Image 1 (cartoon, rainbow, N blue to C red):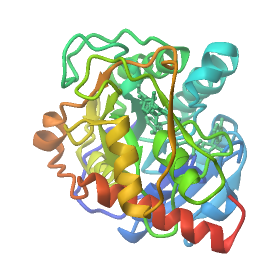
Image 2: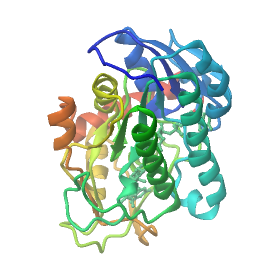
Image 3: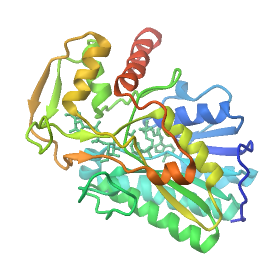
Length: 334
Ligand SMILES: NC(=O)c1ccc[n+]([C@@H]2O[C@H](COP(=O)([O-])OP(=O)(O)OC[C@H]3O[C@@H](n4cnc5c(N)ncnc54)[C@H](O)[C@@H]3O)[C@@H](O)[C@H]2O)c1
Ligand SMILES: O=c1ccn([C@@H]2O[C@H](COP(=O)(O)OP(=O)(O)O[C@H]3O[C@H](CO)[C@H](O)[C@H](O)[C@H]3O)[C@@H](O)[C@H]2O)c(=O)[nH]1
């Protein structure tokens, strides 16, 4: 890998793996708006071709396989969003997650090394920490993932550290907490949806009868689990900053969240207030492996990247997701 000196706001030639997915499409759109040259690589396994923003070049295929030849063209960096990311599925079919996440990412790292691609921004996750010992969670917290998905992301983080140290890669891992909201015409539309806000909004839009509250006996104020919801556009801003702050031979790791927790009941209430729908909710069993409270300490991202989330109001986050849900209902299939 070549050494890299970052220049802020410099237009770059970038590969975005997973750019047809939820977070990747928003980030690709923001990168293009900022003047970067974006090539999306996506196998469309969970993404959608029509989510790839205008102005991006699209190469369909497996991220590792495509990178092995594509990177020969000479790129300034890779933003690596492509992954399998369903916690439940990862427990039932771990091989798919170890191959799809870890093996794919190792091949990508080798391709970057082979072709001298200097810079990587990687989508890591709060799931690398597992059940936290205290809250909010800083980057120095112990990493003890409680599911295979989190274990694969942690393994990739370890591999990135080794490649940065040994080969001079400039790398940043961003550990997202609960990503939510929408940006422009880009939002969350997973065929298998497990995330709370889109599921609740399906009730409001009439495609689901009720929402289940997974447990109301947690040691929290209202008994339901608490999460840190971060707007997808704020997350995208962090990726742009990470590109500028990546330094050769360093692997920086940052938590991305607002630092405020909202319970499942509070989220449902925010959805009721935004949509005007009563949204029936029933309490069911806890979902296996769900921690009671996950809230980020994001001071490092604020101090070192200069990141400042702008869209922290839960109602505003839900309102953006709702606008996206309604727009999709008019413009095409989910
Ligand atoms: N959404 C969240 O709340 C959240 C939280 C923490 C971390 N993350 C991470 O962020 C990233 C994006 O998540 P998302 O919610 O946008 O998921 P998503 O499923 O919407 O997007 C993933 C994209 O990657 C593509 N893809 C998967 N495997 C591929 C491969 N081998 N080669 C090429 N393309 C491939 C899919 O087709 C899809 O377009 C993932 O790495 C995920 O683990 C997401
Ligand atoms: O129908 C539902 C869906 C979810 N929940 C609850 O709502 C909260 C949020 O659940 P999500 O599935 O929306 O999100 P998670 O907190 O489980 O997962 C998020 O955080 C994880 C880290 O633990 C990973 O990073 C993952 O990718 C990311 O989406 C949890 O307490 C969950 O039990 C419900 O009560 N009912």
